[in-house]
Amino acid sequence: EDQVTQSPEALRLQEGESSSLNCSYTVSGLRGLFWYRQDPGKGPEFLFTLYSAGEEKEKERLKATLTKKESFLHITAPKPEDSATYLCAVQADNYGQNFVFGPGTRLSVLP
Amino acid sequence: DAGVTQSPTHLIKTRGQHVTLRCSPISGHKSVSWYQQVLGQGPQFIFQYYEKEERGRGNFPDRFSARQFPNYSSELNVNALLLGDSALYLCASSWAFEAFFGQGTRLTVV
Image (cartoon, rainbow over the protein chains, first blue to last red):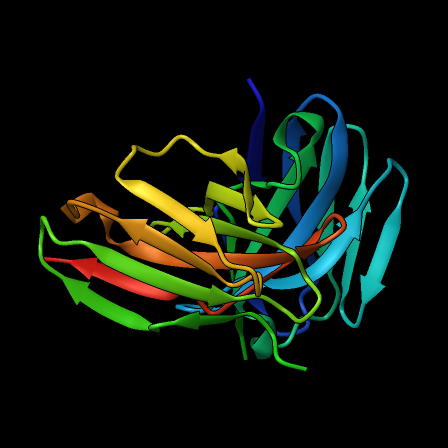
């Protein structure tokens, strides 16, 4: 069965303390893996798309990487404004243009 | 540029009532998808429309229906509301493989 899981469920960091979030997936025919950021009560905000194993993308303090079974979102020297829920989603051949989302990781960065 | 717009932003309904949620996609995007997000979970796919045709349907009961108009805007309709339908309803506008979400409609069923 196709599945997307994320760990940890919640993460508390001190400002400046780097860490990584994990997204593991089991799908057939991966088309793309997507990272979104979601603030409470808001819609998800697009961050990155990764299409093939070995691909990496960066944006400010965030860096996303992809392997054949998982993706990591690395956060370097986070700031309190990075506090949010980070969602991972996959598109696969069976889903058309639709996403299967993981449950998210709630990140809190303390000053 | 206007992003994806959804209306209303908040809504309170009574069990058994009907609700209509609306979405306007990003200009030039022909695909609209709807997702339901229950508190503490990731969004779940409900419907996708492209060029006014249904292209995908998630595992939701027939009480949920949608349509897309010639200007590519879309409506999501839910009949016979249940308490469990309380959620954030998200609309996504797609171009190729990437999707951009609106701010959502928070539906509360009492």
